[in-house]
Length: 411
Image (tube, rainbow, N blue to C red; front, side, top):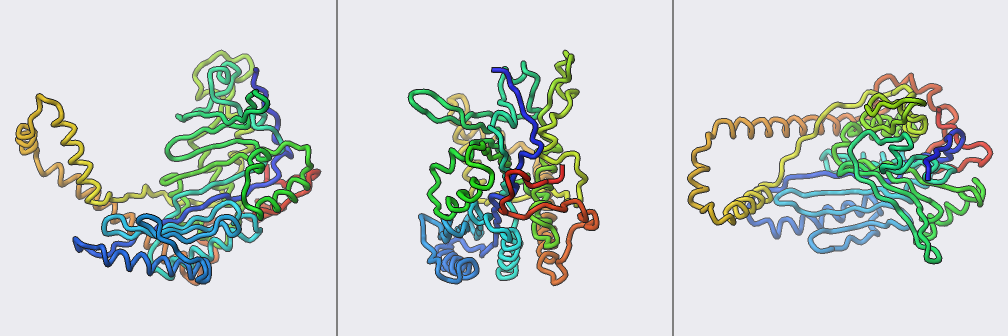
């Protein structure tokens, strides 16, 4: 079936954050036996997280080797504490139902800043999900990713894997959406009404009952969701704590930044070239990712460096040596003799550079921690005067708009 996309004009009825993960690491001690110390330390931090997030009523539970505290059905916050070698790891997740409130973004900032001040350690943002609800069917918004799509004149101009979602109905298969992903991001487009039929959160159901009533019961509703992970979140390490920024403007910034290296291109009328980088970007992609809007903020440009736990690295090296020696023609003593011929100077030079990069990252993170916890955190970003008029008329968070007058998101 030929791909036919429809205009998104007046079809986007909501934009909001859907998930944000914060993580932090703290080195405990260099002792070889950390069993007793790590257990008491994890209990302490789990109880402190419970006090900050749930006023002490969350009751942390030990699950395998970590402590967990959270409530995802009504509140939408989940936290965990665990040890990795001699480092304590803290994760705090704000998910789904948490962002149903209009002031959720500000609440998240207050909680995250409270954690930074309490524990006196920098938190990194390692997951950001931005969602948009659109009053069209999934394949009317963006095309599939296959040979038929290219023949129809569309191509996602970046490396990715592709999967389609479907359900079975009376022995027939009905497609409900698709996903495009790599190890560092996912772009999922799916039928939101179908997903809500399997929702277990009563609060979420009540919210969307009013939401669907507002847009019209027979109107299709598709969720378009961008999920950024790990280093793709690095540009937002500081700006996410800026109290002068609204949720809508932050979401736009995330989408626009992602689209600098990822785009959907379409063949011009009559064009026969297969040089896809010469194809123009499709108007729906321009609209979804706010490419044509000015960027109001200057993001940090830092490639974050982390060091792998020594125990984990040593195990990986031993596993590789075992794999190498599994070849019958390679004896262990021959491998060790070969290893002894390597020069130490280049190896130490590389190791020193890795260490310097890691220490630079820690200094930057500490600088961010100092700035975002400052009493003067009223606007970390530059050029905030550009915000005037940029987001006029936009609603924040999970507010619902009229079906005859969808939220104008600025395009």
